[in-house]
Amino acid sequence: MKIQRIKKSHVLLIHNKLVEDSRKSLDTEPIPPTIRSMNLLESGIYVQNTSYDGIDKYKDCLHCAAALTYSLVTNHPFENGNKRTALVTLLSHLDMNEYTFNGKVTEDHLFCFFVSCAAHRLNDFISCKSLDSIKNLKKTIQIEQNFLQSDKFKVGDKNMDQEVNLIKIWLNKNTRKYDNSDQKISVTELVKILKRFKIKSVYYPERQILSISKGLFATSTKISLRTSHNGKKVPKKEIAKLRKKLDLTESKGIDSKSFYHQADCVYDHFILEHRVVLRELAGY
Image (cartoon, rainbow, N blue to C red; front, side, top):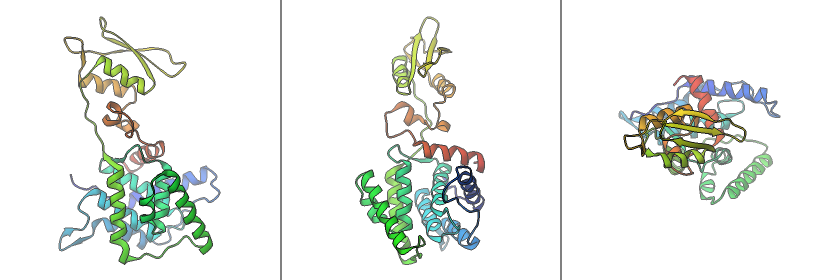
């Protein structure tokens, strides 16, 4: 699959959206709309296209995403909000290439990761064994930054390849491809799956009707559900229609891996929220 690359227009849309959100939320440190350097922004984005003698330096989308992330964070093209803009740009880049973070990665992980990236402390971040140790690292870095009275770090080109590779290693470990393939399953399996999503269901085989209710005070809704000739299996098309009706689809944060299998697959709310908004903004 050809790598889909982020454009300057995407990053500007992302930054503008974050500026607007910051203003609406009455953030104590609102993000100003100012671009510090358009040249630094453009060079940070162009890094995705780096090549030597016609051969791309970053040959897969995760390596490309790693280089883009590093450059946007360290180039510091905006007056403020560089890490947040780079974070959401990374989510966007992964989404364009049909990747997402697995269920182990939360908003806390992501913010700590970007603080570590800006501080050139990725080795320390990757060596952390728990979320508590990651949060402690973030606090340490912030204390050091306050002591230095600066959150701007000089770009060390001699370390760029090493740090980009560390980002790629972390992305390889913590992302996965979307899975949109449906499976033929039994009615019993379907009822168990729906229960995982807090949906109560009862199947009436003589009428091929699935009665469902969602939430504590929800009323029952009857959905037609055709099964195979022996009544034991639900065809893929019927599963796909049911998932769409119940908002259990990839666009809602539940791809097939999340739907059919347990845990570590459902997206963090922060990731899903930004992914859906950016799809609408950027039109991809």
